[in-house]
Length: 309
Image 1 (cartoon, rainbow, N blue to C red):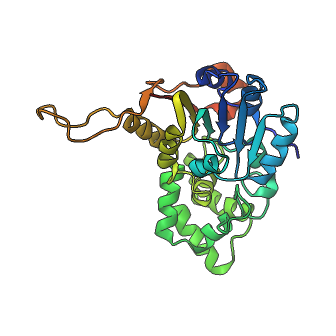
Image 2 (spheres, rainbow, N blue to C red):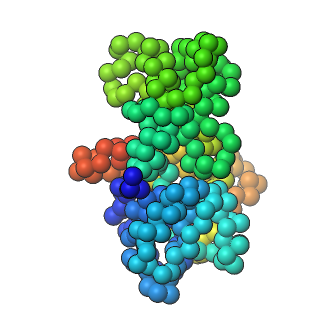
Image 3 (tube, rainbow, N blue to C red):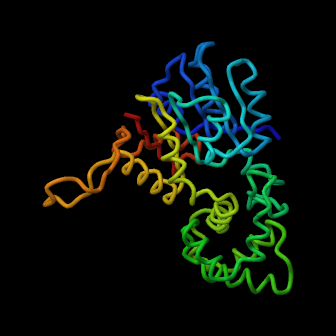
């Protein structure tokens, strides 16, 4: 299956990156290289693009998509390690960073990866196939209370408790090792009035995917580290698809603006906030109605931009 990915908020992202043709840029979520192609297209031979992805299949597919460009370095790693990655390349600071936190169309549609709730496959959901924890491990080993919490926090699933309870009841008799076994449990757990908007398994699968790949917990620090890696005037563009992701990005941006949080009646600042730059997007940039019609997966996307001082 072709590793395809329709880049979300493409024009808005490229415009806000303010690409310097001779600059160094990082795509920390290379995926299907949809954004990377246009970043590379805006670079001269003196410029450089560093593409990072923890999915080796994404790296291999990106090499094919970007084969016309000779100034790209491919790194099979996690963007959470951006400081060490750049250090290993002998690069102190870069001109721009992109983090598109969405899952690629390939990963969602390639049923053998276990992300899809439409076709039956082994429960996996790992973006990095070398890691040990899988969706199968989560649903068969997590305690009921922990499962319910994950489904509620990461999936915003209103029926999280009953789904978690039924998962734990089912696994007493039989291991939950395929996507369809999990889908059937979810469908039986949700009442008819809860099935009116989209597939009933969508939120649960999203929550388990986030847990398996640890997508939320390190995000705040990743944003702060990325800002530290920017040159003066450099920008980071972050596209989120989930409220928890967006909150973490927003909080990191606000804290990196370094505005004093001391009570107004104090004669001088004691919070020692460090001003690292400014938020370019006071409100997130959203996809147009036309883009949502063209690509339904862009519906929940939000783009936030920060510029280094």
